[in-house]
Image (tube, rainbow, N blue to C red; front, side, top):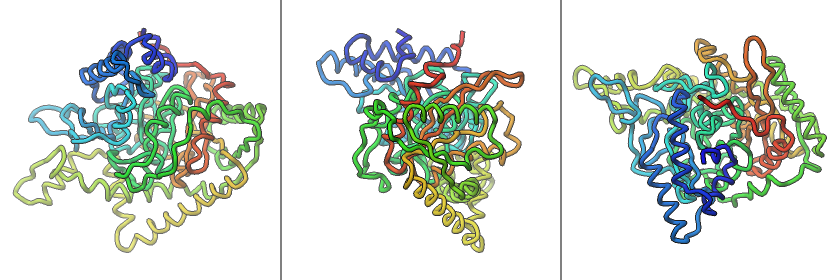
Length: 506
């Protein structure tokens, strides 16, 4: 039975739909694996009772002869930045956790939203089983999942290394096959980078393709919800379920949702592939470069045509992102003040400003404070034009780079990260070095286009590191997600990494 969790997500759903197994059996197998691999730190909250109850409802629907949804009985993890009415939502932050005298902050005491995020509601409607809330960098701010207030997430390929961030828990639980899929959020690479470092597929949809209603905001002009899965077809099925217009999100598009799963069967003949020279510059690990270039050459041998393209404003992506995103974060996080949600620190006296300062000082972690201060500075009178306005102008230039590239090619292929997964603690003392982990994912976010990471290869084992996954980034124009899945699935049919998974914990 537990072998089902090693199969692609559509196969799990089909087995439940055909009655070859039950949703309850699959759910119990998933919960057992989560308990076995608790040392990964992938989950902040495991919804055992609710998950089993939901699975039994799916089984009862089948017994009554009712049609089951596309994700029937499939166990799914939910990033803890997404609101869930039946489970706490903490964003891995102490500020969203009620304080108990003499006790350490516990995610179980986290804020309880009165509603589900739209994507969560759509998963439930498709008969998915939500098994728990996954660990993350606090308020989605980080590239290694070391900024969580409740402990690190570990990479299942090497537990001394990071799974990436900020959606590290969502990536790790899929990579370790604890669940068949999960949801994360991607602001500057927070789905794609951890997918690349853990050897799975992670999708950042076009801005507006998936509703943000119920996603706790980091940077509202950049945030997007997307799926993780072990393979492209599985990720495509999840995206088909969660995508589409939502009247509760004014930024969501009313364009029709594509046939993403069917796109996985399309051949590559006549597909025009662009290779941006700026993504293969100094700082890229030699093994990562070799793996990505080999994948690009293999796709060319299958019928894709290669074209070198230049995207000159890529070099400004990092600086632009860390002005725009921090400015928006400083505004969005102002709502967490000790009045309405979670933690309240009562300061001496009755001064409201002191209570605000005490609560935010105790509740926010160092990285969140750093970004709030950077963003507040960039928006301050006298600095707005020099920083925020200039960053938005450069953002337009970055988008124009993509527009020019896509006038000549159908997709772009690049690395996901400059290096494979790095050791926990390796970059925590140097924020700029940590920020550089997302240098290849930030531009697509700033441009609002769609992109995904698909496993490319594994680095050769060396004296200083074991064999580790490498991700290939596929970037397509806005609302061209079908091209992403076409390329990713075609590569999976060729990939030397196909079917590989981390060694199972004993």
